[in-house]
Amino acid sequence: MSIESTTAPAAGGFTLDDYVRLVNDEIGMPLSADQVAADFDELPEWDSLYLLKLVTALEPATGRKVPVGRVLEARSLKEIYDLAVTG
Image (tube, rainbow, N blue to C red; front, side, top):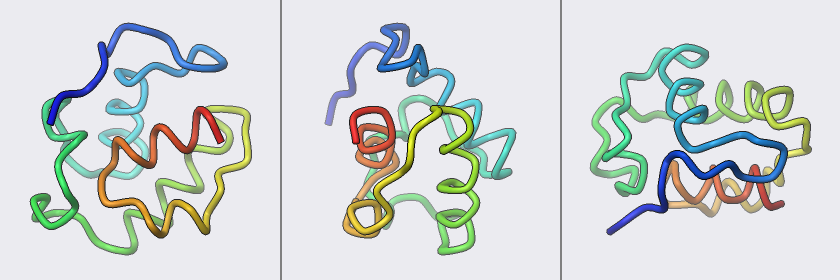
């Protein structure tokens, strides 16, 4: 699965690179850019606590409300990123 360029800014200037840094720094989960599109089942570190931390960190980082109901249906961190920056 390919992901869009990590240098292209999304709404509000929050890039995919910014997102990877946020996952690493704010929620403490080691993540590389090539893992962003991986299914959660492929991320051995992933758990529900990371999801809560991520949603909490995303809202101030993007300046937008994160649609939690839709986030719960996401199957990858890339899907969550897309929801966070586009609603």
